[in-house]
Amino acid sequence: MLSRLSCSAAIVGFCLAFAPALDAQAQNYKTAPHVHVKTEDKPGDWDVTVGAGALFAPEYEGSDEYEVRALPFVDVEYKDRVRFNVVDGLQVSAFKTDNIDLGVGLSADFGRDDSDGDRLNGIGDIDPAIEAHLFAKVKHERVDASITIAQDTGLTDDGHDGTTIDLQAGYAIPVSQKLFVRPSLSTTWASDRYMESYFGISNAQAANSRAGLRQFSTESGFKDITGNVLGVYRLNENWSVNGLGRVTQLLGDAADSPIVEDETQLMLGSFVTYTFD
Image (cartoon, rainbow, N blue to C red):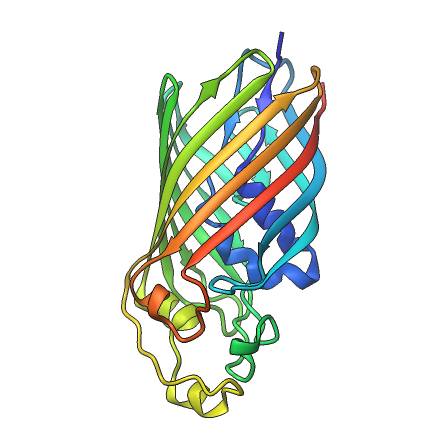
């Protein structure tokens, strides 16, 4: 009998941010679905899952060049109220029932370097940002949905200074006692400052662009829609093999931006995790 099935598709993306060469990819994965499924209560106050794997993903959001990177996996929860992972950062539930979870937290946006792609050369870096966020999650039987509002706190220089609202909904499919599949849809609304940082080109940036990018203004709006499929196969009480597939379609000004080489972005990942008793 499974004691706990605990994993996060989003963790795959943001765990990459701890590899220096992958900082620029971090914003690609903010809308990947969060999955944390119990089959029965776990004894004790702590729930810790660690692991490692690999991810095939674009070099930056909008790139048409892909790379494969090794990645770590870390997810720690205390008393089902306080949680930390490198995707969601620190989350604290202020109000929680079997079906509703409301809370606050701190997370990170790891920015982007202008060396991450030829089209970015000369337009400057986007520094990492510390974000404060509010979240609300609801679930009913196999269906779950969430909304997360994140705001750059301004504690670091030259961050995106903007706001994002991430929406996602998923459906859990327990194929067997060992196999779990979760398809989901997600989308991100971004403020004008966020869009200007990641997809806009100022006159100064256009003048410095080594790729000859033109000036491009952006406005707030939905920047993407994403389809995700997460599969988890439980080898035993502790070990799991996980697979993730994701297709993102950039929208609006994000799709039209001169930095974007391909409006459709693909991500594939596989990793092995160990959940401590």
